[in-house]
Length: 113
Length: 114
Image 1 (tube, rainbow over the protein chains, first blue to last red):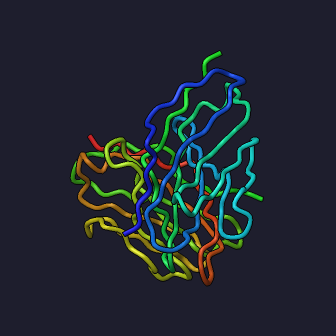
Image 2: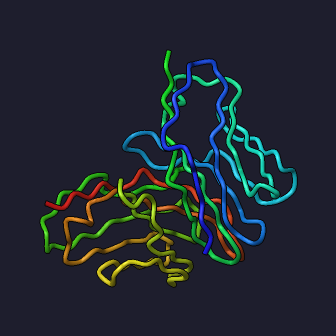
């Protein structure tokens, strides 16, 4: 079965610093990959997605992610973090013909001023 | 375009009761999925409905059920509530005809079982 690993439970960065959140997946073929963000008590907002094509994808709020097949990774990046980026970030995959998302355990981002 | 609407936002129920949660997908979206989010188990897939048919089901007991109406609105029902059913229940909608497209989530329904 497919799985998603987000090795960092909690990350703290200073406002204006760069950010990279890690995501690794386990699946034999190329999955569909997503990053979602969740603010406290809220639903999930889609940041970006990868289905095929260019391995560097741009999303909303200045985020980008790079799909690396050789490393089974889909890391999320942002060059300069804003205090409003503090939230929980989830990596997710959809594989094969399944229509369900499998989520990682999430990374909580704290931004210090 | 309106997003995914979940009602109610908050619910408090007593053990043994049953509860029904509602989800209205984005206009034109025919697939509705439900997820349970808890601190211990994270985000787990409950089931997916497409064109009024359950197309996929997660690993949850039969107390959890759902349905979809002809206008794509969906409800999920939990019977004989247990304390462990306390969670944020999230609904997601997608176009999802053949294959998968991105899913958009509602704000969720926070269920507390006492």
